Image (tube, rainbow, N blue to C red; front, side, top):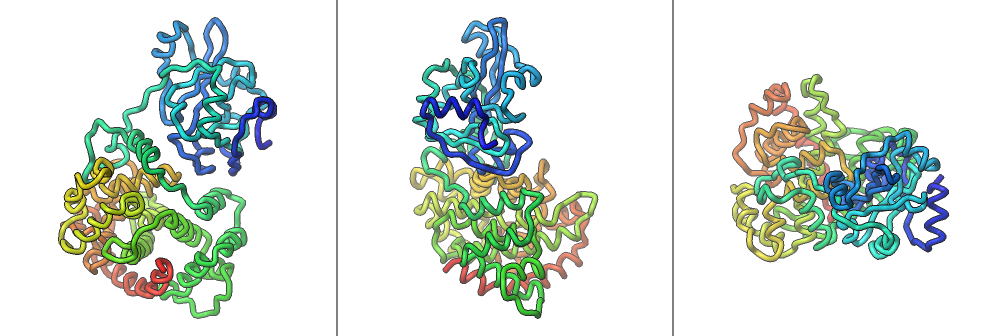
Length: 469
């Protein structure tokens, strides 16, 4: 079912307009948000409650927690969470984990957090584990006119350190979520391009195959050409004829490598930044592609007990600098200054260069986070793997310990070895030995692998020039 029957009847009778977002079947609301590429900060979470007067449903932001003490004191009630067994009896036509925010369709009163009423649009569960509803803010507010409105949620202390404070973290009093919401409101963070979204959905479907992926890529001539150039590069030393995308995927690259490369390339089309300069698209893609290749190659040498996935390592390397693209897209004047300073001060770290741009223009509170945290916010909102989010957030923080630390360490090592060849923007003093020890790597073997990989990566020059043209 695309939408629960009672909900469908209710919203049709009330004339509530919505956009259905279909996605592969999800196990819970959080997974549905990821699969549908919805913005977590704009998602409405429905929580059934009950007291002696009967059940109600609280609707709060997905990333927030319900403040039961506040809701009870504000409304002079004694609510407790309604158990799953009783909730399932009320929402009989709804899948588990897909309770809709329009609970009035089931004859229940609704208490909505006032934070949900400020958004330009809202994502809600539909009662079906394969569909989310995207509703304009105006329509959502109108539909909630009969609901009780109060501040009933609390935001967890997801400080920037939790995701990755970046090198230039702003005050610890600023939460990651508040920064993301403010960025979204002020600057309209670019959505993941449609092709990238479709690739993500395809790769999350265990029943998808090489032919479906190939057909999707073939619909984008530019992406098809780049994948073909990649397959024909010296990285793979394939001497046969490759006449189509299916051959490139099936014979040379494989499903996982192609899907991640294609997704990264497609996602980058959300940005519009200059081609030239040390931070321009030409240098960005050289660094990104080399990083992806090296991260995957070195991941195969890492201590297997650390359980580093080579596919996730490739994506972490490819995407870890997406914050540069976002800064260039949202803040062109500041990006222009960063680009010039990077060129004039090649030995300085990006952290030091970013500090020099503080206070220039209205974007200072965001630029001050550093491109790592800025990029991590976007990757998280886009639903990318946590290993990629952490690698973006923390790749400038040496000796990082925490979730995703082995991927972060791998990206830092790769940045170090690429910097020795004049590739990338991370020209900082870095002792690779602790990282090598942490990952169980032999330095001589890694250096030998780096030389071979970089030599092979040089064949990607033609691909990079066509990507940025």
